[in-house]
Length: 498
Image (cartoon, rainbow, N blue to C red; front, side, top):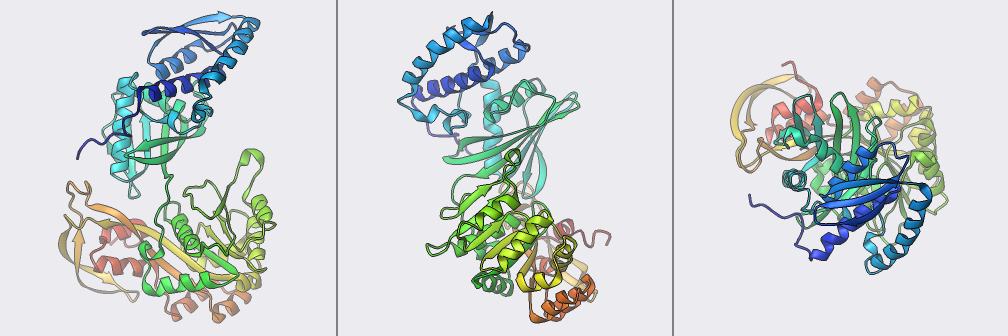
């Protein structure tokens, strides 16, 4: 595969502006002043009481690629120079406001050529991550090695990484780009950066965590551009898709999507919002974090530092004349009560819960303190889902096996397909699709909810209504050759001992 550049070549002045912007932000953070520089050395003055000059030197060296010469100055002298420098900085940056923020787009791109080994290594890793559709990148230091892994289609895979000697440089560079405190290595930190990769903008969440042999850095790759989130592409059966669309047509009610972390719940919610998105509707969301920007939807991100919680934002949204509300996750009784009340008072509410099946979701709401009659009055549809990897169509191998089929435990010979691996997929799988278990809330289920029926009783009613379980939905994909039996067992946890 050809080596694709991170971005189109930019004029030399852009590279200079990037370096200046990053350097300015770091000097402001450390209360330092750049005195002068030449082709090899950067001369900087810092406060005479600066405790960690080594950290400051390392940060400046990684940013500029120059040797750093530090001088210790008293506070009054530093302040005088800073005041003089600020007026000059304003003049220099007036022509390009994109560099005024430490979190602006371009100053975080990996195209600085000065710190070549670290930059080149990170460029290669990020290119590979985008090419292979990774969602996360793990940089893991150990005693004698530095491991890099990528989560591709939900599974971690090791990839070639930088040399062990570059571990500290890579981690420091990522922390600088994510606006983290490079000198702080004892506490976890979170940040965000934005880069251009293969002519597309990506935002990445940066998380650092102290470990035994250094800091582990994890990047979560987020798309900054509009994505196609149409419901037919998610993998719903025609019957389940009809249930989803019918629930979305209601002017009020509650739609819940359930499953473990990484099962695609957020994408399902967004597809529903995109389906509803129209000039005539006021659609609002409260999320942690905002992972997919959608034009036409008012998206709010919670902030624990300012006590901006799901519940507090949800209360505020109800005063914003909403038609549709999306709550990223119902985590507590307070949020559940507000969401259920909103769903009963003229609002369509979409949200998620962490439960394993649709019927467990009903009892989970009761455990959170929601009365059965409120659940019956507000709930329209529950969707439980998982994501399974799809077999690569270029290299899958046929296989005939005796497997258990159906809910009655009957067995029979089936044409199965196995992963092989090729230059198209690298692993035998390429992409993922959803398997779904839907629970349409019918009058029979409403009566059972009011009567506080058990999970088993609710499941029996659902089966009588023709509900297909996650396992049955997955077996249909296995029979079609879309996924493998092993992948289905991995995701659902069923059949692992057979």
